Each structure stands twice: as structure tokens, then as C-alpha cells.
Length: 306
Ligand SMILES: NC(=O)c1ccc[n+]([C@@H]2O[C@H](COP(=O)([O-])OP(=O)(O)OC[C@H]3O[C@@H](n4cnc5c(N)ncnc54)[C@H](OP(=O)(O)O)[C@@H]3O)[C@@H](O)[C@H]2O)c1
Image (cartoon, rainbow, N blue to C red; front, side, top):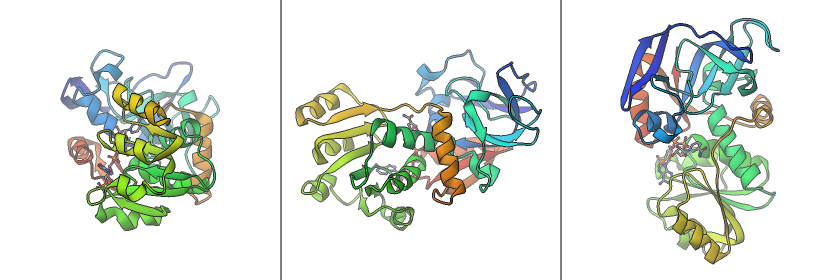
């Protein structure tokens, strides 16, 4: 079967490899599609070598959707499933992949299986950032950075479902898209100063994803005892600045969680959570998909199909 593999840092190749044999706790899936996430090309380019915990070659791609091949372990052959493999271990960008049963769930019934591949990583990240770390509450004011991206577009909708007042940052071309997702206010980060806009009406929670100076600005626009939840990384000087201001900080690294994904699946099937796919690539064009993701301008998600 074909697989997209990292053979050495910076070298991604399509190779013929054997169809994997599932271990006792694993399920074999015929892959329909794999969601593209920035972590894919960051690992491929060596920026996140520390996350690779097996010798190369490494099959890339950790968000997956497809069909169960053999009945057993709670699934029927042909069941449509989706899940998230452990980032940095053998991935899913291949015609077939094995995945631990504990990292897999039935896919939403109402969502095309290719679209479903885009869901797990960004929705679990949003869930864990807003609910687990952020402890978001009804009527709180929440600032979501990069509202048009994979994480942001889900986070806006989840925060609205929770009853929060949502302010999202984006560039002008994505303003209407972000408002359609439910944001109450949009700040064009290219033309507006976040502190000027929010200093007189601060927020309870910030979801930050792009690192850089926005973290310092976020601290300035948080209420006392508010919280900065980062999915990029929080350097020590930011932690100190936050302590001085009396606001909390927490870095979140996404983990598969079956219960969280079950809630996400229900929200999609209840038509409360929308998924946007702005680009679909055949796996042989994976380099083009990674190049588009690297530009940092993706609206919603990209997927690679088999
Ligand atoms: N810690 C974790 O567990 C975890 C999990 C998932 C993702 N992440 C990280 O979080 C980041 C975002 O992930 P993603 O999947 O959402 O990325 P993405 O989909 O590639 O984000 C693209 C979006 O970011 C927006 N954007 C770019 N620069 C911006 C800025 N300075 N301010 C506001 N918006 C900006 C763009 O909108 P415009 O074109 O309008 O600018 C675009 O729509 C990545 O670095 C990723 O590696 C971390």
C-alpha cells in the first residue's frame, strides 16, 4: 500500500509499505482521508523533532477517518470511524492504518467521511482549551485568536454553544466567515490594536494560538484572575508578566479523549457544529497541502484523501 512517510528530516516521500497488522488493542481502517494540521509539516520539517518518538521512517498525519476493515472489538466491518493517533508515533497518511481502539470513535452520521477526518485534532484542542483548561462559563467574555483557522473556527462555535460572548481576531477577508460562525465581535488584527479595542471592556478568557506579542497584549486585556490559555507555547517571561498582572496561564497540548469526541460528534449530528473544508488534496499532492498550510491563511481545514 502507499504511505506518506518522513524518511529523514525535511524529506517526505510516498513509499510502498506492507498493510499493517493490528495488535490486540488495535483496529485496521481503510483510510478515506486524513486531516492536515500545522503539526504535520512542523514535524516533517524538523521544527518539532522532540515529538517524534520512534525511529524514521515515520508515516505522517494523525487525524484520520475511514472504514473498519474487520468486525470485532466493538465495531462492524464497514463502520465509518474517526480518531486521532498519538502525535509523533506512526501516523495515518496511508491507504490502511491501524489505530488503538481507545483512540477511535464512530464518525458523525451526518458528516461526509472525508470531512470527518478534519475534526478530531482541532475540536479536541478547542474543547480542552476552552472547557478543561479555560473552565469557560455562560456570559463570560472570551477572546479567540485566529478565529478563521482550524482551531479557531471550532472554538468560536463551542464558546457560543456554552453561552459566552465571543470576540475573535482575523484579517478583513475572513470577517464575514467568522461572524457567520457566531462571533459577536471581530477584531482585524492587521489594522487594530487589541489593547485599544478591549482595555475598557476586558475579557475573562483568551485562547491564543499564534505566539508572539499577542500573548503580552492578551495579558493586558484580561480581567484580574482571568486566564490565558495557549496552544502555541508560553515562554517564562510571559508567565512572569501574567503573574504580575494577577492572571493565570496554561499551555494545552491536545490529547485524545473519547468522551470529548463523543460530545463533538453529537454537536455535529445535532447541526450545532459546522465543519469547513477549504481544500481537499489527493495524498500524492501532500507537498502542496503542506505548503498551503504553512502559509498560515487556511480558512477552516484542509484534508488529504486516498
Ligand atoms: N497545542 C496543541 O495541542 C495544538 C493543537 C492544534 C493546533 N496547535 C497549533 O495552533 C496553531 C493554530 O492551529 P490551526 O490548526 O488553527 O492553524 P491554521 O488553521 O493553519 O490557522 C490558519 C488561520 O490562522 C489565521 N491567522 C494567521 N495568523 C494570524 C494572526 N496573527 N492573528 C489572527 N489570525 C491569524 C489565518 O486567518 P487570516 O488569513 O484571516 O489571517 C488563518 O485562517 C498552530 O500553530 C498549531 O500548530 C496546537
